[in-house]
Image (spheres, rainbow, N blue to C red):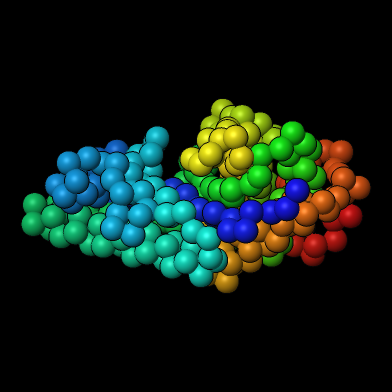
Length: 270
């Protein structure tokens, strides 16, 4: 069975948010209040904190007070990159408006949005990739053969992370997400984070298509990293849907391996 002539792809990015004091001391607003202030302009325009932009993207507050930007459905990688960049600019504009209101109210603080995947307490949040694929009975067998690629691609497209080592030292690793993952393929997204989520919401003709939901990726700032991350997966899906076979590249313990690769900056993990 051949790949779709036009594969639809989208990316969902959750942003971290904080309100830092400009006068020293504790933050003047917690994350919940900062997120509500950030979305005041959105609610004023759309009467909701869950809206669609003029470009077709979805802008909303996700669970845990995370501002989220979900790109419109794209069938060209350059359009996806433009959508992702539009999300960054939209969030920056909302932060600028919110900080102007803080200044008007005399609040000694400034809201900062972070395109990362871990907060100071170690709580993770994600950058999720969505790929339209043909519906067929052996799809999840093919999806599982992608696990070794998802375990190792952090070497090329991980956002990097400085963590605290066992002796209190600073340690650099490839990915912010790798240590947060708990399963290879699963229907969960928060309770047990898998590399690939099996939730079946194609937002298309469900008899012909399904959506592959990849949630292991880091949020990238560099557009080249986003292009490689999504473009390589698109090519691999083309290969599988044209009859390719990756079943000889299986890992016995993928959750152990994703952590080992993350911490092995020499890339020597066999």
